[in-house]
Length: 220
Ligand SMILES: Nc1ncnc2c1ncn2[C@@H]1O[C@H](COP(=O)(O)OP(=O)(O)O)[C@@H](O)[C@H]1O
Ligand SMILES: [Mg+2]
Image 1 (cartoon, protein in one colour):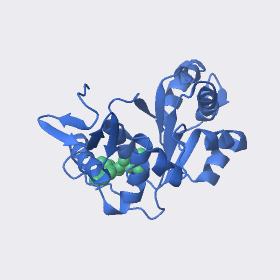
Image 2: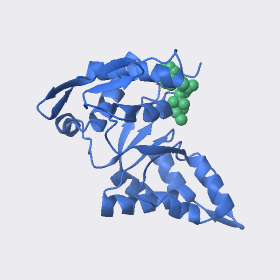
Image 3: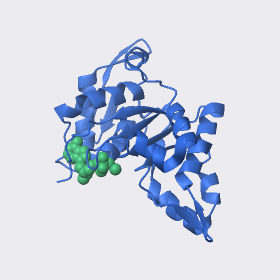
């Protein structure tokens, strides 16, 4: 996608202004970002997509993170260098939001969304090469982390996503490579799934942004 100016995003024949340029400094307007996200969401997921008032806090955090608003992120304890771990109950809209949010920053390096279970299926076919493949400098968002099956290649079990998380942590430390993920597990469940060592790396790798446990299931 090409963009003449970071304050304007064009979808079809419609232009969305996410804020104003002051010199070369982009001053974003959160409400305008939400207008754009709803429009883009409808294009991507269908006309029933809407921005819910109840999700405003989550969206405020995610948007400030993606637009790299240092002041707001600092206030909310979000580290712009780290990735995002978006957690919440099934159907609350995690996958949709992570697919959508990258479009507000078309000039930033994009991340590729990959279902965690597909990575394990890949591992079951080709083995450890799969783990190497995700140790590359590409930015990823691992979708539905924690509910993928245990990998098994030639009779050997492997906690595939746990291994990949360790590689991603090294990439983050050494090269500032970002990793995002979505999950419906809580911190304790993630620790049970991946063990204490991986869990502590994950704390370094991610900012945790969590939907409320009672968040509405948006599956119609
Ligand atoms: N803001 C929204 N408005 C309307 N439908 C939504 C919204 N967010 C998600 N959905 C729909 O709800 C379902 C679940 O969303 P999804 O992003 O897969 O949730 P999760 O990843 O948290 O399980 C999908 O069919 C999706 O299209
Ligand atoms: Mg999902």
